[in-house]
Length: 419
Ligand code: ADP
Ligand code: MG
Image (cartoon, rainbow, N blue to C red; front, side, top):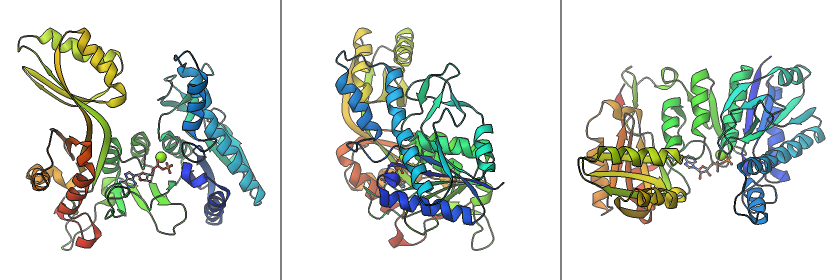
């Protein structure tokens, strides 16, 4: 049995015309001999009646106590995908394709009990396989699972991508297709960089970094799972015929160069994250215990910190603005003096080719200096350089770096190095 998983995001199932397009994609897959499993997100965006944020706000506006239960929040948020799955399954049935909808729980997704950002710990494929064998198209509600105790969990923003890949891996699917409102994975967010260009082939590693650094077109956990199980992933537009972005292992992707050598891009793309606050804590060089206490207290409150630089008398890090008041409360309670710089954004330049190439940081600095964009802090890992800037500078920083590293189509082929 040749299985394919096809995931359709919120904008791809938002109205009946789009759902007709989804039916076409499912039909095409069947004509190619696949047994499709469809995964859907909640329909539409905030404001639409059954979108995730609408359901969440419905609960927030009703709960007068201000102490919303995370458990109940997950319960209401999971409804969006269930509604979407039923509507999609009805559309398939109406067009003559035998279909049924399943919740995440019914589809065999077992989660770890971490409300709002659960991980799938087990997947039981038996029920799904039985439906596939009887030639039914199963539409699974994405973004959710159930604990062994029977509590509903959601998987966090973008979690339907992860649902799709877990199903793909567990069912031994030939590939997982992620349909969305852009042509594929692009060199930068096309909403901010008009010159952004689609990337035809990418490695799991590159996409993982781009996703972790904020390229929300795909969820990082989905890419991780695909990498672990070597499931080919394709990101493409719902309505356009273009092939989209094919994501696979490095060996299959790094192409042969002009002279037969293996070559790769220096910079693959640029991702960004907004809504960050930079904190700078000052203390005496001999206060090791206090230093530890700060980081332990933040961790106890599950406040995630990023761009961490520790010097004897100064500690720098960023937090998400939504966590800022809790982070400041920690620092105040510990009596440390600190400086706050809110309204920051992080720009991350990602590329496999920068691993062996000195001077990429110097070029990032030159590009931003030329535009008088101030770098507040930086960080790097083997294939990523991250820069913290004021959010007001973000659009210009993205466009400048995009042009400087010749990622736009106007400059032709991107710069390459030997692998
Ligand atoms: P879906 O509802 O289909 O899951 P999302 O809104 O989660 O769609 O993701 C698609 C959006 O991701 C695009 O509309 C685009 O603005 C944004 N995006 C950010 N970075 C990138 C990138 N590098 N390539 C493509 N899209 C990106
Ligand atoms: Mg998404």
